Length: 413
Image (cartoon, rainbow, N blue to C red; front, side, top):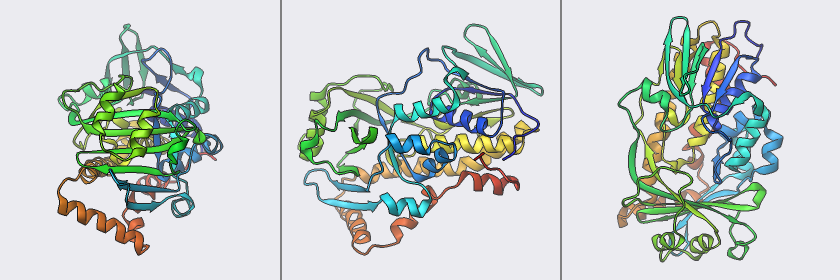
């Protein structure tokens, strides 16, 4: 797409995956006045994995990251869901080449730090302002002003709140709509693949479903590490922090009696972490005038569809394309972005909640029906398994924006 002649000044609060995707997309679309403001003094991502469906990988490829991702990512062969204790396969959903051919991009597992580094290097490390904490913002017909805690004021034409689930921008924009506690706790860790080689872990998304809890593991870092996450009832824990260390003995007790692969992977991990899970009911408005939100600031969700990061990536791409399509009217561009994203992200939010209930099923009859449905789909090679996810993985940001605005809106080659 040709660079717009009229270019609004863009302020992005937050240099996480969503904020950097937005900045990189704008840069590739020819925008020159972009300021990314990040509160942390040192840019780094947590030591955790992230699943990227083809809907997100497609965006990253168009942003020029195909070669970089191919070097650090792992393309799983399937999503295999298994019984928590005996390991019997419940669901076997093909990924690999079949998924890539159907949706135009592969399904990837990536270390979050590798993805963050790829986005940061492509955008430009020197172009991210660090150690700048946002205090508030204000806007009028002429523009928007971002107020830092130091008292400094930064002016622009558009402000994007990409500052996470406890967003300062959202707190002022939509008062009284705080994230809610789900009652669930996520344990996470990362094991050296060589140290866990005796477990014979397959190159899949390996999901273990049990009563009131589940466990997921997959390879990252070009197969050198195995990332895992275990979801359990939270008890009294309420802290939402990716860096809060946990007690391995406590975690093993949570998964007492579970399959030897689950327990063996935990035992092969040096450090374990835990954080409380929060989400928010879908909300139809996250834009006011020249200010908008994206990612967890707009639609935090539980991780049971593995789409939190992917939806942030989609947000960044759609927002950038809307601004490129309507550069003379930033408010209209943000309104178009909101119109395109709210229904889809709400569907993912609610679907993620429902997936959690399905994984943790305790009713014997409902569990039997669940298992038989998935096994039948596998045995019959039913196309229904694809049709259930076509809406999710087949999404094309560029096509959606082009249909909305009625004009060519494509990322630069």
